[in-house]
Length: 365
Image (cartoon, rainbow, N blue to C red; front, side):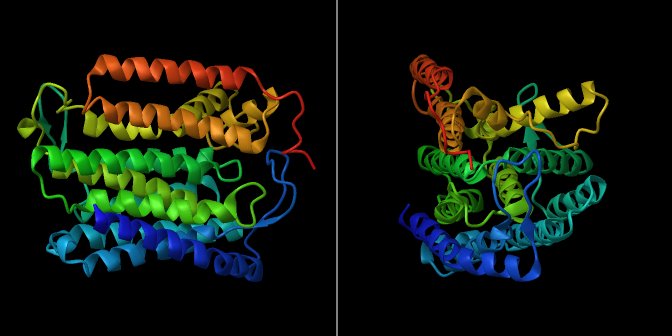
């Protein structure tokens, strides 16, 4: 655990220290988020914060390679190489999009290239919980992996509409995933040094280090550079976990052996996925492209109810934490107790949503 925490702190520190440099580079090269009708920020804001996050990830991985107890992760470097190649491609795509505003088909091709590169190099789904354990053939494995990565990237990218929102949601979700991945290894006697756990710990650190610069009012945005990166990392960590876990070897009882490694990533991305599904349905119903921007996302609805930006971010993050940690807890405590806790938490959050403050000025000029 200590080694993972060192990597988390390293990722946070490097991201925090380099975010001002990323901001300066974005200003110098003109990678600015201008104020548009659908946006809620009030002044042009530099993008490219994802650059600092990428360096934070790389430093965490390099540090892990020097820690004796983490050495087994680097015995086979194929997955690490695949992960870093995928990250590099998605960051280059994000840099270009943040600077030039790429069209949706071009972005989709770039995302497929990043996901496909990882999949072809070995970061792939291995099995699905269908009629027990269904082992995927190589072609199906690659195709499903690309699909999972695409959904995760675009879900996080689409929810990134308020200062600190994407970083907060992913930080909380990745924390839940880290807890599950680590304690699953402890409980079942797996190798505790695992790439999926390292990636999730690094992801927590990257988001934590970036949040002070990105909280309302943000001095720098992560941009598509950052949102697509952390979406890819969320998908990659869950995919790698399925390769680490042998569901037939997990104990029964309080542990959900077959489904949780697949369900947990969905629970972590519940808010972004719900926003993505609603957006696609809404735009398709209107006869528009699913990628056509609008001002009807979940965060827009919270603002319209009277919540300020900070409060809206806290509500959506709390909802993510409730679902993600609720899913994790089913692996280690009785399901009825988890259901009771999630139900109580859900009622509390619903009351929070339905009782906005009388006067809100945080998202006004």
